[in-house]
Length: 85
Image (cartoon, one colour):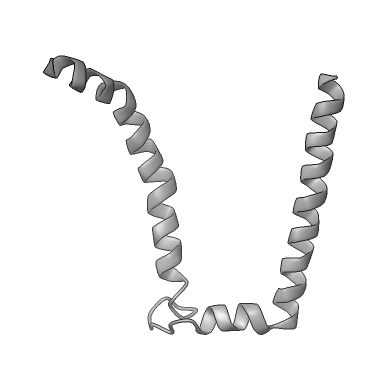
């Protein structure tokens, strides 16, 4: 009975380790770095986020990315559906 519970982890385990190392760890590290200053030495809290969401230049960049994302998804999904039909 215990063999049936252990064997699946030999198949899933490497994938979980891979995901943890290449997706989860970098995400946590990036979030941690986002609370530090430009040299990553001093804790600045939410100052970076305050700048990002109040700066006209950053808001324009967010808007451009959103437009690009929407257009790309529409053409990619629409093109895929057109080819599939």
